[in-house]
Amino acid sequence: MNKTKMLNGLMFGALISVAGSAGATVVSETVIDFGGSGNVIMGLASYAGFANNTPIAGGNCAGAGAQGCIYQNNMVIGIIEDSSNSTAHLHRAGNAGNRALSYHADSPGIYMRALDGSAFSLISMDFLAPINDKNPDNGEADFWNILGFNTALNPGLDQGDGANYGTLVAYQKIANGFNGELILDPAFQNINAVWINFNGYPQTPDDGKEFELTLDNIKVGPAVVSQVPVPAAAWLFGTGLLGLISFGKKKTGLSA
Image (cartoon, rainbow, N blue to C red; front, side):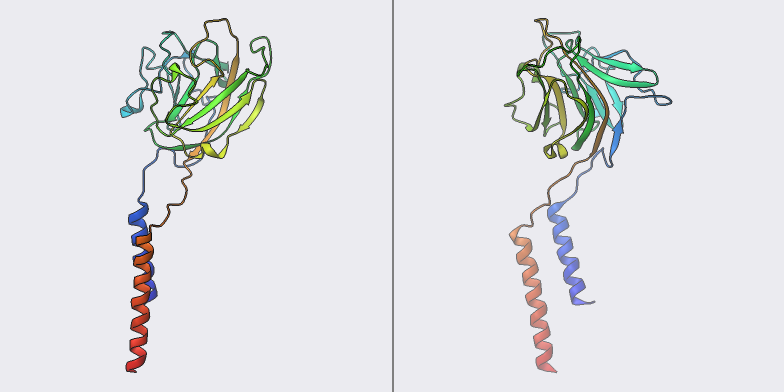
């Protein structure tokens, strides 16, 4: 066997043993479009399943609205559990030929994770929050939070705004009035869950606050993981092999 090839094979094996591999539900880019002509997936008018605190086994949502989660493209979409409001829910927007998902002031936001809890990338979405009579305010405090977490299940989010939550790894602030395609920050390329809510309202508003957001065409993809650093031991192993091969060549030359 060629010694260079042998070295390459040994080094590759060492690196594989170091890096390892992990399964993932989301293996290619895909778009959640919430249904349309010939692809109607939103059979309910509202969705009240808790996606943030249920056991991953089976991928199901918890709570009284356990069946009220959206399952598409190996993703689960629902609400976070709101301990102050047992009837919190999301809405089906649009018509049978062009569905979308709507969140306004009768729930604590939208929560999304992979079916098996594995990591994924949140790439882009149609984020439609124009200022109108249903969504009237555009002051300094009127904006949307998009929060990414490094664990799939994050119970108790309704007890705070998530800004200091231990598993928070990505954050993006969106001004109310944004109405178009939203490209997510690179920090969302390796997350296990995302929560979208209106600033200051981790629970359903009880003060008459109004707001409305419609989401569509959510693009997700595989997690983008940084290259695994090669430990010093692996480099020393390779250096040692190179030294042995070099020594072997010199010895052969001397005995010729």
